[in-house]
Image (tube, rainbow, N blue to C red):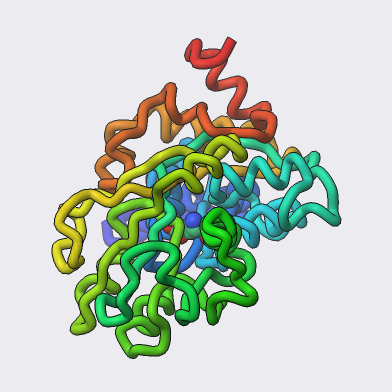
Length: 328
Ligand code: GLU
């Protein structure tokens, strides 16, 4: 009796081990990494949200997804193109510039291998200034210490565009810093900078941190004829609003007008179709659950998630969109 019991136990253990055979499952598992941004931005939790949905169905998709905190849009696009990351989140304006061979890609030329997967939440060019620095308009930035964004970030070019629209040179007229957005709130609270730009979805941890300190801060509106001209000049800028209700600590009492772009999800032409298809299917089939993962996703719809993209769709994404009639 005892012997039969032991044999049965051995038999069961062997069955369980075969079922969990790490070699068998490893052979089927595809590892993908999503390049995001600073951990107090919205890209980082967005990468986390996409990975969570995919990893929850690891048995079905055979994909193991991880996120990486990075310097932002430009870094992510370059890392995806270099094959260092499978996916990246990048501003729609940066995607456009990479495809056209503009801005950071001027010397390298058009980036032909970049592929669009879908677009995500809107991002607002956000200018946060210390109240005691007396900055109420863009013109007041002259002579001030301003963080314009780290190389590799999306916001760096947005800051330069906004300053230039008002005839302000970032090299001559302000004391420009190029720190990462995650460091900017601390620098502002410590009195080491007067203001910072951050192109980000709302609410974001970094902006909450900046508006919750002892040094009172306000959002500076980015509007007026110079901005109207900027929107006319570049196809990727649109008017946007910073919802003030999300930041109780800010000095402003009303929503703040600015310009904005969109966050987009990109990959390389080299990423396998079935991997891209699986991710798109998981997010689009379950968009309602995805939207509960961050308040910035509230406005997302299956149709507006195909807007704001300049790179060709990845074939894996295109296949899904055609099946669902989202694309002709
Ligand atoms: N828009 C920023 C960038 O491209 C990142 C914002 C975020 O991390 O949410 O660098």
